[in-house]
Image (cartoon, rainbow, N blue to C red; front, side):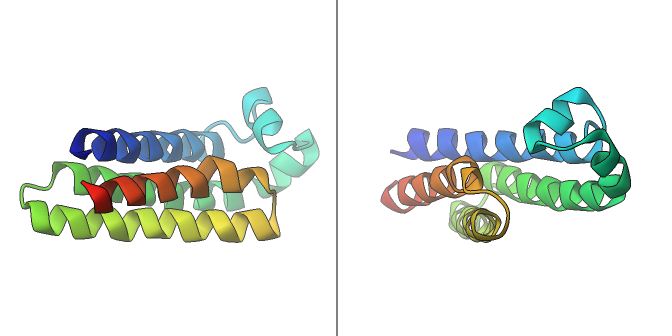
Length: 120
């Protein structure tokens, strides 16, 4: 189960690295506009806000990676659960306020990873 937990945490971290890139670098590109269903005009007007959101997603990914590489297993466990809980809560908020698909992109994988960490 420890291997599954590590894989799920890694997956959640990679998703957040990708979201960070979409929001910070690719917001005004066809890829970014398609991912978030944006018009070119709206994307241009909101690019600074999106970059700020992307930075926060980068922090979530960094925290998860920190939890994976921390040498003290007891502290690593706490770090992992904290950042996974942050991802799950952010996903719930995003699903309620923005798009339901966020529930499946962020919250569901984070909850699965939480369960894997707790059961490992």
